[in-house]
Image (cartoon, rainbow, N blue to C red):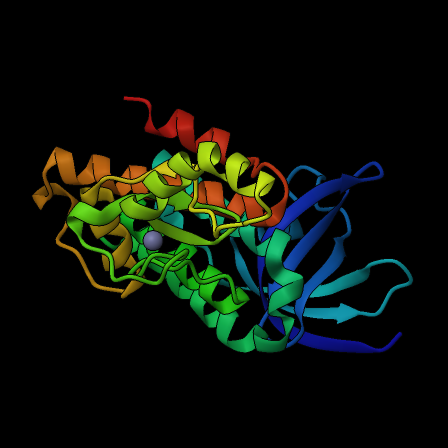
Length: 276
Ligand SMILES: [Zn+2]
């Protein structure tokens, strides 16, 4: 059987047969790969620990019929601090789930995405910054890499520059923030459009429905995170700012689910982790 070696992060897994496990890894060399860790569910198995989610390994893989087979695994990084912090662990598992969902679209830039994922896990594990803010930066960078970068600085409908007083909310289908004027226009033209249609006139509609309301403070968190700006340590930030960061994360989470066309499962773990 031909073999090859990759550096990879474990991003998803499911049990196979009596004692095996199928692990989805994101590798620097080939992007997403599904591989079997034989005997990984046997108590005390050496490969079992290496097959845990979020671990980074150097793998020697043999080409199999359905899945690749792990013939050797050497641990490179395990992020032990994450295991002791439920909220940071939940965000990290969310990174892993997003990677397993969107990973096929990242295969062309597998090497740089692998570096970015490992660096993001390292930040979540070691940094004192607000974990929700780190997650927001991760989400926005991932969307950008996939070509779904949300429009945050000009109205996604009319392209006018956004300011504190001009923000209405986020529109998933249009992929960005809609200004107050377009939103009001949209609500108004719902009535006038009927008349216009009778007369054979069709006006450009505004945006009557928004998917998420966005306040100026939430908008600022989005813009800051999108620019990749660092923030002070979590304990130096006010509760109001932290709440705005979480609200910003929920806006982007909704947009990601819209793009994925499905619920992201690790989010329920995150909601539990955030309950005081
Ligand atoms: Zn507008």
